[in-house]
Amino acid sequence: MDESLLLSLSDDVLLAVLSYLRPEQLLRCRMVCRRLRELCLHQDLWRKVNLLDRDRNVLHAALGVAPCLCSLQCGVRTPIATLGFLVVRTLCVVTKLVLTVKSATEAASATAVIYKLSALGGLRKLELDIQYDHAECRMATMTLMMAAYSIQGLKEFNITNSGLKPLPALTGDLDVRFSLTRLVYFARDADSFLLLLLKTHAATLQTVQLEFLTDVPVSSLAKLHELRYLSCYPSGDLWQLASLPKLESFAPSWTPGSLAPSGALYFLSQAPHLRTLVIRPTCTNPEALLRSVVGSRSAQFLRKIDFSASSNVWDLCVAPALSNFHSLKSLDMGCEPSDLFLRAVSPASVPCLTSLFVAFSKGSCLHAWFHRPAIQDVLVRNPQLHLRRSIYLTSENRYYGYSSYCAAEDGSCMWCHWGCHGSLRKVSWNKMAASAHVRRATCPVAVDCVKVAGSACPSCGHQSCPTI
Image 1 (cartoon, rainbow, N blue to C red):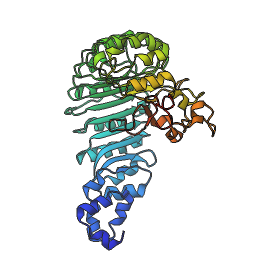
Image 2: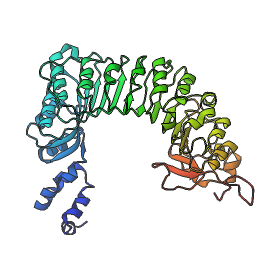
Image 3: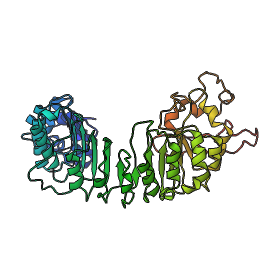
Image 4: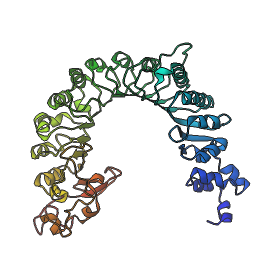
């Protein structure tokens, strides 16, 4: 666009144009004229900017003049000491700070950065990855933890203790007002810092994700009355959390192939308000786990279930009781469903089900699989249903082909040779939803909804003839 034409635009329109520029382009535009010098520093242009430490020059320039940033990352490619030097005089308000601390020296610099950006106000999210052996320099680590803990108004805190040893306990004046709503804690032990965070922010925490540690602080979690999402190891005393009034989502984490503990089974059966269950790792007693879910107090309210089990387990434990899940909208089975299970899926048993995630093996043609009588039948009987690829990587779920047709040009199977569903030639199973309708507003976003089923063709009698 011509410069004179660009400058003839109103401020609002010009801001809309400038919003497409990268940070370094905005900084260069400031040198064109006085109007752009001021307009390129508008808060609306910078509040969505995410700065990484791979370009030190841009980092230096932005922290010198930008009014605000959405996020700032440092410590991966640029030493945190460099960032500490840059933020000394900055007035830039940063919403999210991501720091990777690799040594005790960097811990001191990270402490200074946190205190400076916190003092400017607006710091609401902090991600801290501690990658050094802090047991040998506890004072530096303790000072860093105090800086992170003392941030007023912090909403989200993600901490990774890569050093594995417990973080040191904080001492002194710890007068911090509760504000945290989301806590993600990667550590091997439930150390004193974790317990302090849970205690301080018990009144506001809504999401807690505890990774790696097996000594789950259940007694502390039981006091989080605003808790809505929990991901943790399903320890034996997890039953104490069944009475949490607002807990809607549970995502247990354990070593794949382990036994689902009895405490987790009791929790699943008694928790009354669950809406989402995401059980990613496989376990050695899937029947017991699914039976706990089928007979749970939350069964009629569950909207999403992700769990990988063999088709015979689904047939045995869930198919006869599908009507228990009256509110279910999304189900990931992690396997190829049997005809028996597909026959159990109906508007009467699961009236809200719109997405069924299933596995499909690499050995056969996906297009031909869509023409299986059971697949055609379940889609026709459930006009709102979408069949999608399971998220689980199993021996049954290894289809990665871009085209859903046979590999041969002329089609190896009857259906590919016949030529119906030509749109499948350019659609990956990973990015599609198979249904009995054309795409509409209620279809899943970010995927191609492809009609693969319908009424029998009146002229040839085939299901899903080439015109569909």
